[in-house]
Image (cartoon, rainbow, N blue to C red; front, side, top):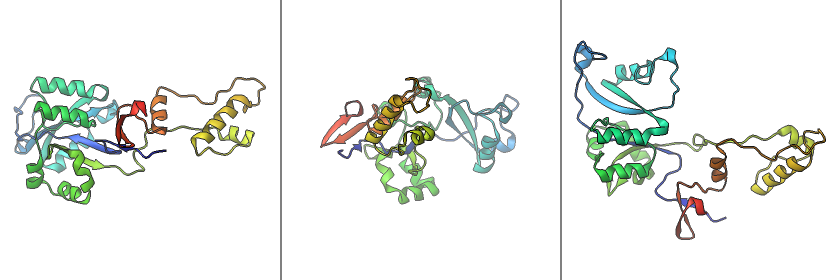
Length: 252
């Protein structure tokens, strides 16, 4: 099998679009969630957060919970969190941008989408901010220079990012019936050919022992396309370098 290299995408990197604006306090005393006099003296920054429906009701909301309160207390800023439904993130961000209501920082994963925002003038370079204000992130980039190309467009930095370890990026998995392997005297498959052999055996050799031709070699839920694509390194949304040619994942 030819080695494939993803183009313009770094496997396992979470990309965070950053649009930096001047911090200011906009709350009015006595209205809604307006800050106190003490907190009003601190700078304010707004940032999107991906709403996956995972904040328990007894913990509060995405805007206000023990973690957001800790961040506000320890960061020296009043952080305004703007929940964005994960399944509609780009649509919601486009709406906020068009209405002139986009937050200071936007959290997204798709580099292509960030490139579009850059071309539209919706986000600005952050090189000067990193150089002037950053401490830990500036040091982090020096430790991980391989990330730089994925944060830049036209030689300027628009994205803040971090690397994920190889043990944290898996998001698909399959399970296999060990008792059926034992029943048929099969070993755990480690290659695609071995997996196909096991699947055929499950289908044809009655591993559940009921004397009926009623077992399946494999069963998948709605994630099956992602699993199959991952097995063959052929993700439809990515481009690969194969034999010196750029090829879309669907056609590999």
